Length: 524
Image (cartoon, rainbow, N blue to C red; front, top):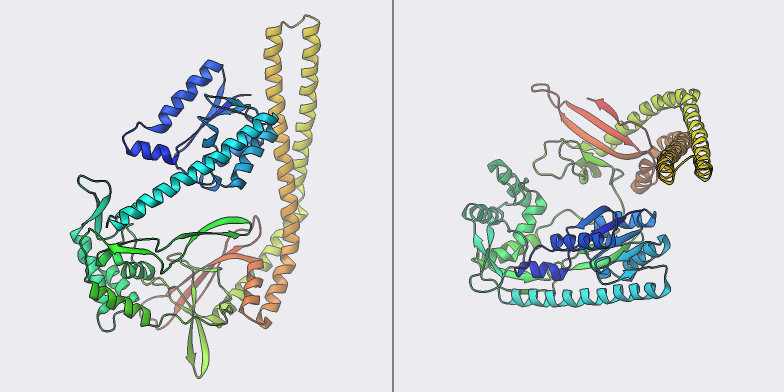
């Protein structure tokens, strides 16, 4: 078995590089390759982590390495110090320690070789990971304190150029400020002016920007969200902030998730950059945003849209939303695309529900015929069984040849060199056959599982179509549709000029069943 090398930058490395030190990964790579040469170790792979992630979830190369360590693919892993393996919380540290311990994989550093199966080395490793976490927290606190101090001095701490500005290095001191980009600044000032006009709205501003061909900082069309985010940003009236959207960790489905929340408890000071709008205009915009009613939010928070999380715009990809109005004293529900530049036409909810049920019934009839034909034709499963049996017979034959090779070397027919070469070839052949046999077993399992799922899926779908019209509420309807579908792509456009209010509606359905193809349904 060979060895792997794992390289990762730490926060200290990033600070050192910013101060003029050489590139970290190249120096560490050279040091570990020299170490492997001195120890006469065969290196099979080098993993380079180009990000300084706090957790294993943020480090894809570490995830790959741990997966292979858990499978016992490496005899050992070379790393500059054990602290490079994990600086996350105790859960991450435990995952790393257990992966190396249970697989018997060694950790080799220039200072020491750790054998996690050894009780003393295991304790030393766990202590090293614990101290690494303490050091990481200390560095993080120092960096955050430095950033807060910089913000209080009016410096800009963002990592990207905000729309309307470009970042510039401050002369004769550490830190950054902002320089106005004239063409972007002009557009930004128009955004504030348009919104403050009588009758000005977020959607109207987005559409005017689209008509002008203006793009956001990331070269995308302006949306309602990007316009609101711009209007809310105090940067444009001359302030810099810190902690306005702090990160909070939550547990969802057993996984740690990071989310940002707006808070009123944050640092806001006058920045060193030039303001693009007056503070009075910015305050007027905030007042209008706060007092303009938006989409109504129900106090009961009950679901009203049976297609929630399922129906998407086929033109721009955004989730279709529910709109409510009143017609003849009764609520009138419709489905529309919220993207201000999208030309997809809305539909009344009851009519769309009827079309979806018709489409599902039509698809189900064809799908039942297809499944019946597949069930009658058992040749595919038989072919997999035959291939598996052939692989197993060949494994048995090669194993017998390996045993025979031992006998021949004992009898003096093979020299030691011939035996090693012969054994290597036969072992490689057996390993390949074993892998093929496992693939055949997995294919058979997947095929049989899918067959079972399809047998259950048909009665699920039939029952859902039958019960949908009499469902108690939108949430129950949504659950029924989710049993059948992953998503629906919606398109509705005028058929042609001069033909009145006639539209062509097309729906692409993605069934929630393995091996089922996407099916299209069109009407007009």
